[in-house]
Length: 251
View 1: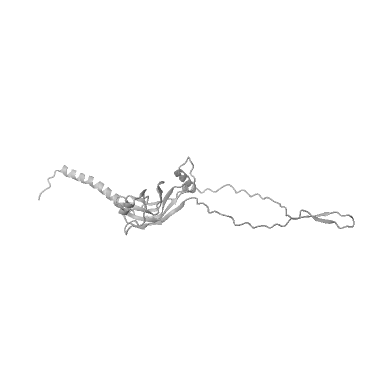
View 2 (view 1 turned 135 degrees about the vertical axis):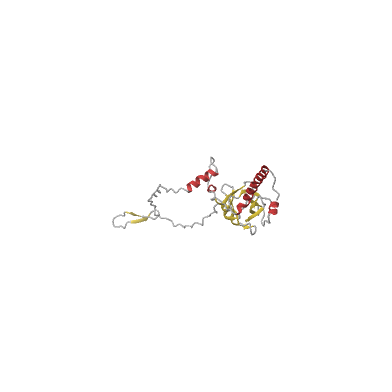
């Protein structure tokens, strides 16, 4: 029976080298595979600053923080409502009062009408002309629901494109639940009926950033110079593996 005659220090070096190689490989495998078993829940509120006028000396983020603090504070109002003043008004009735003139003895007094009112015809006013009020606050431009890409990569929930009062636009993901994966990104592409990675690359897309969580509700800013196309699809895309996880056609 032959013995391993490799010097101990050489065997030790080989073991250390194997560990050095294995650790990054294991870390990479964990980074790529762990999202499949771990859910990330993110519940962002709809931006309150979207419905506010941002002062010149403040940012939207500062306004958002102040409004969130105010919304979480339940402070009763101490001021009482002012009493309404009661004003007694008297108007002339428009009726005529008789003027009795004294007559000589033995004659009946003469009664004359003063300021006799001529009869007038009242024309009822026509219906008021009302214009539809201009929309204030966020306006939904398009919406759709997430659909499964295949039997393994699945998604559900609502996607809405909003235009805010200041003209900016956001994508709002509402109550989504998506198969988790490594480095998922939110993309917008100008097509419907997306047929996979090659179709996405051919159509082109704009990247709104990394998916904040595979469960919950989130907001994503749309670039100011992005022109909304006639057909628009939101895509949740796995960057390392170039795989479409779920899509939502907005209309």
